[in-house]
Structures are given as C-alpha cells and as structure tokens.
Image (cartoon, rainbow, N blue to C red; front, side, top):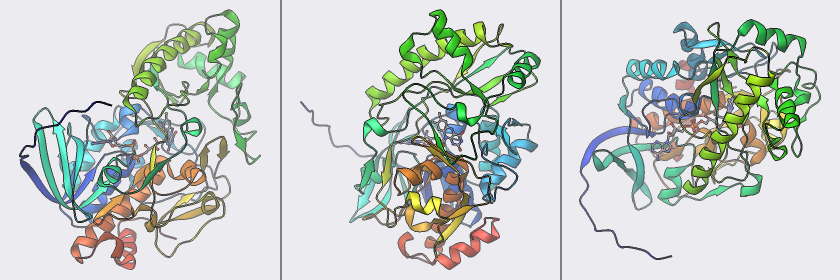
Length: 453
Ligand SMILES: Cc1cc2nc3c(=O)[nH]c(=O)nc-3n(C[C@H](O)[C@H](O)[C@H](O)COP(=O)(O)OP(=O)(O)OC[C@H]3O[C@@H](n4cnc5c(N)ncnc54)[C@H](O)[C@@H]3O)c2cc1C
C-alpha cells in the first residue's frame, strides 16, 4: 500500500483531569458516575452527540429483558439507570420480563441529568484518535473534532469504547473472534402509527416462544427451560413476505424481536436485521452494513405493513443513528473470563459485582430463571502491558462463551462501576490500577449500592 508522511505538529492540551472515561455506553456512563461519586475529578468523552452508547445511539432498549421471578440480579448504577428512566418517563413495560424497556430516545436526556448530577465534565462530539503513552504508561488521548486536533491529559484512563480502541492503539494485546464467527451486526429501527390494540391481539392469538428463535442456517440452543416461555418474536409476516415474493428467499435472516409498544403506537427496538460476516473495526464493512441493513429494514417494514395485523398504517420512525455492533476486539486481560465461569457460578476474590446466568450469543440462549449468578473479576478489566489504563464494557477479557453474558448492558454497567471506583481509588492511594487495594474498591462499591457477592 502506498503511504504519505504526515507533517509533525504541536497539539494544544485543552483539558486535564484525574479520570478520563472514553465512550459513554452502559460501561462508560456507569464508570464515569462511579468515579465521580468516589471523589475523582472525572471527564466523560464521547464521539457522538449523546451519552448512552448502544442504548441511545443504536436504540437497544432491552436493558433487563432477562429478568424473571427468581432472577438474582446485579445491583448498583445499572439498576439506577433503569429506575431513573422509569421515574423520568423514559421507559415502557417490557413484554417478556419483570423489567421496563428503556426508551432509547428519552434516555439521552436521562443520561445528561445523571452526568450533571455527578459533577462529571461532559465532552461530546470529540473522537479519540490516538493515545499518549510514555514508557508504557498512558498519559491521555488525542481527539479530533470540528475544533481540529486536541490533547487531553489524565491520571487514569478508562477505555469504554466498546471496541477496545484505546487499549489497541496504546499497544496492549487485543484479539477478535474470527470474522466468520463474529456475532452479527444489526441496523435497528422503530416504527410509529401502529394500532396497539390490533397488534397485541395478534400477539396473544399467535404467541411466539423462544423455541421460535430458529431460521434457515441459524438457531439458538437453549437450556430447555426457555423453550416454552413467551418471546416477542416476529417471524410469520416475513415468511409470508417471502412466499409472496416481497422479500427474496436469500433474506430469510429477516426475523427477530420487537422491544416495546407505547400507547401512542410506537413499536420500538425492532431487532430484525442480522448482518453476518462484518468486522466492525473496518469502516468499509461498516459502510456496507449500514446501507445493506437499511435496505433490508425497508423490506421488513413493507412486510410488516402488509402481513402483520396492526401495522397496516405504520411507518418508519427512525433507524438507529449508527449500526448496532455486538462483537469486535477484546483485551487480553490479566484474567480472561471463560464460559465455564458464567455457567458454573464462578466466585472471585477480586469480585467487583455479580451478574445472573444470562447468556445470549453465538447460538446459545440461557435465561436466568433459576437464581444462579456469577461474580465478575476486576482483573478482566486490566490490559497487560499498559499502566494506568482500565478497559470496561463489552471488550473486557474473556472467551466467546463469557462474552455472550458480559456484553449485556446491565453487566457492562456493573463492570463500569467497578472500573470507575478502582480508577478513583488508585489515584487517591497513588498506585497503578493493577495494584489497587481491592478490599477498598469493594468497600466503596458496597457504599455505592453495588452487590459484590
Ligand atoms: C443490535 C443489538 C442488540 C442488542 N440487544 C441487547 C439487549 O437486548 N440487551 C442487552 O443487554 N444488550 C444488548 N446488546 C448488547 C449491548 O448493547 C452492548 O454489548 C453494550 O451496549 C456494550 O456497552 P459498552 O458500554 O461496552 O459499549 P457501547 O454501548 O458500544 O458504547 C461505546 C461508546 O463509546 C463511544 N466511542 C467508541 N469509540 C470512540 C472513540 N474513538 N472516541 C470517543 N467515543 C467513542 C461510542 O460512540 C459509544 O457511545 C445488543 C447489541 C446490539 C448491537
């Protein structure tokens, strides 16, 4: 490949902070709030115009759709997200669980309020493009924005980019699932103008279960106890659309779940388009996924209008503002979690939180209907080889089986809270994040309302 030489330049340092959190999804937002509440001067940097990550930018609204009567759930800032959304009118009843779906649009404002209340310095519309590393210690990041190229210095950095962008650029070891095995990406969309009464009547007269989560060439292996449970699944309209010639046969992947329906007829979090084989760290793949996904979503909408009762007069409300990505880089952490940890109720001395045995990915679905749960080790957020850096959210260290659990938003918030508290305490005790006193971290987490064991 031909190259050019970029001219060396002086970059202004526009901001200095104690803890810099980059990326504001469930992981980063929780990390920033926890760090600020633990007493550190905290900055939250985000490339887009709102906080919330997949929740607000993609429209992933099913924050706790796994929760059943016997579920032993996480506690802490993740639960606070759900409760605040509820009290601020930013949620709708979730059809398959004891939870509320968070309204992805309204949560943009809820997140603003949470950030302001915690005293976090907000920085939207700046993209991290390079890391500042000296002698294997991270000192800050370089950002690009409408203002050009700027530097931000920090005593500790938390990588919550979802893609481990900072760890990768700083030279830490990261790995990706082979492209052909990566979880599919999705263009998410919502519709409005749905006749709720007709829609729900049809759902009740044709109830779907998790055993319907099968299509040509793909399927979900459950633990058995899920199969008969109700699932808000949409399959029949797309089968009819294929029969009628509206949707080509090779797009039998168009099928999936709806998230919530409001009194006003908004049918949101339509998780119906699955684009396999994309590597979302490659912008050419992202371009292809966005455009192909929107094309398929328009076909799906036409199929729903023609073949799903209640949708006759509905129309597209919005596409997620960016492609929904489930699977990219993960760090090689001091401890890499395993499927066994998730399946066998793992316990760790350095636990920073718990998450129920909820596995959703790589063809496996296990719902936490039993009360089983596992602990989350702090070491899975410690990348090897770079000091003062923590990585949280979906890119923590672990294998495919553990990723199918820890990628869930509530779990990202649990890990995020752990990272935020640990970063603050490592500054206050003047040690690297790898050497932080875990007992102190756990004590502060308990004071913040988290559950450790
Ligand atoms: C279609 C789809 C459906 C899903 N369904 C569910 C579900 O029902 N329930 C569930 O719990 N989970 C679900 N997930 C998974 C879940 O949404 C993610 O795993 C979770 O949001 C990851 O959280 P995170 O904080 O690690 O990262 P993200 O939510 O991805 O947030 C990362 C943030 O970092 C920002 N960022 C990235 N790079 C930079 C940069 N260089 N500079 C500045 N900012 C940057 C991004 O803009 C974003 O705000 C789904 C995912 C997808 C894609």
